[in-house]
Image 1 (tube, helix red, strand yellow):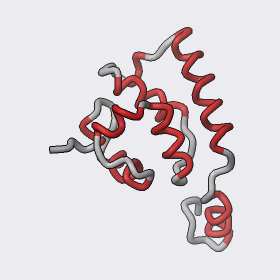
Image 2 (spheres, rainbow, N blue to C red; image 1 turned 45 degrees about the vertical axis):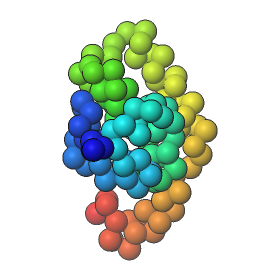
Image 3 (cartoon, helix red, strand yellow; image 1 turned 90 degrees about the vertical axis):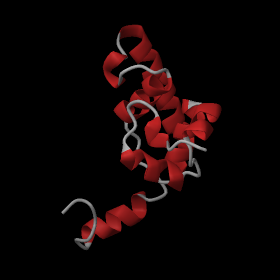
Image 4 (cartoon, rainbow, N blue to C red; image 1 turned 30 degrees about the horizontal axis):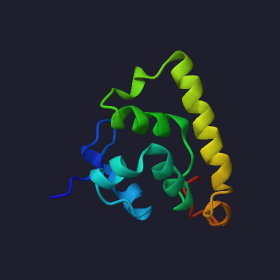
Length: 109
């Protein structure tokens, strides 16, 4: 039986929904594709880029606490994150978010 994405260390229940929007419905799928491909899919599905979220996922896939990332390893992960974010292009939901915020129904009020 497949395990939910949230069964991976550092990933909470909200992760299940975010990953499902990106077509990733189990921990096994996430593990098989790896963190970089999974993060690309999250961004393409409209998730906002967030470095801590990225490295918490990477650490969790290694079975490590989210705050275990330090020094040169963190610098290298930041470079990977920036490359993924750049390759993903603009958030496809950015335009609609701006419009919703302008009319007062968005996430920023």
